Length: 152
Image (tube, rainbow, N blue to C red; front, side):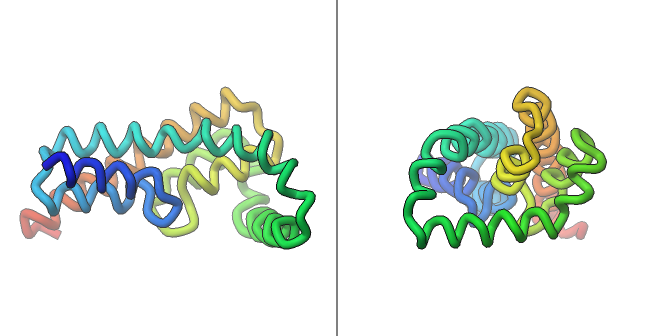
């Protein structure tokens, strides 16, 4: 069971799944339903401070290399043209809704990048990300439980 919890945590901090994958993985592998929710939520929550640190400290150093700079500009343009207008327009609520939607390309990684690009205050962004991650985790958790019981 420890192995399944560790893998669920790794999925929850991964940009390829976040808690949207960690929670179902843990549930389908027999981890306690409440434990998997709490552990995956907290693991996903840890991504925000790590991403902000990366974007503010390490990103500026890496921008010296052309290959990284091209990739960073590509990601920034996509973020600004995608949901950027709505996040800028609605601020806290736009960021919260963007992080909350349990779809690929949304979540705490995208929310952290939006916080950095649109210069949203970190405290406000952290609260928006926390509430958004919580609501997204509740949606994924409850949907997975209902699916496992044959309701959905």
